[in-house]
Length: 233
Image 1 (cartoon, rainbow, N blue to C red):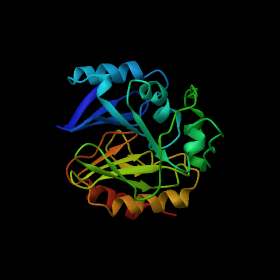
Image 2: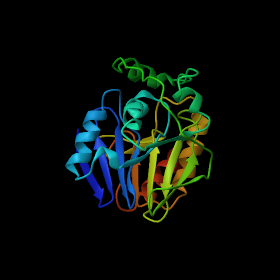
Image 3: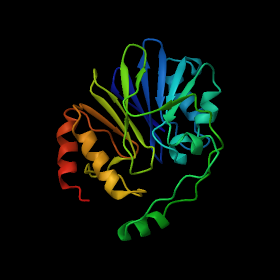
């Protein structure tokens, strides 16, 4: 796993499958997503490498229920006084009370989906705060706004930090190796996913952090708007 500093308070933890992000606040650390099952030791190493302790983690913000995002959340939630946040639509899934819906694949997505490696399903994760659209979370001197962005999953949530102009999209938006920004794939509802992309493109964003693909830095809004303009229902 590589650790990439995007700005002094923001670090990307780049896993082979999916990314997590670490925000450094005045009161400690916030993780946005946690990687697959078994990645907690790698997250702990990254935190130590940045000069912090696992006990400095105050919050885990989950973007959606997929295993490459919540896989290590239960382990990290046990590090100390950690609050876990997720959208209310998906808390029953994340808590292990009901299954999550599968994607509705487009024809061109099927070969890609069939090539995915087998996944290790996460166990139940404690959720301390159930979010709804517009809820505000204090990250230690900086507010994050929960933006409900359904489509990839029913309760996908992006986290928008207006003051530093940072957006965490989860898997609702992605970036290819060649740098192209695209609508996220493997969605449960394509039309809602397009609407959610357009909603995020309307925000004032300097840095856009994706669950898959390298972040956009600088004027991320311009690229998000271009992608939204070419997305079709």
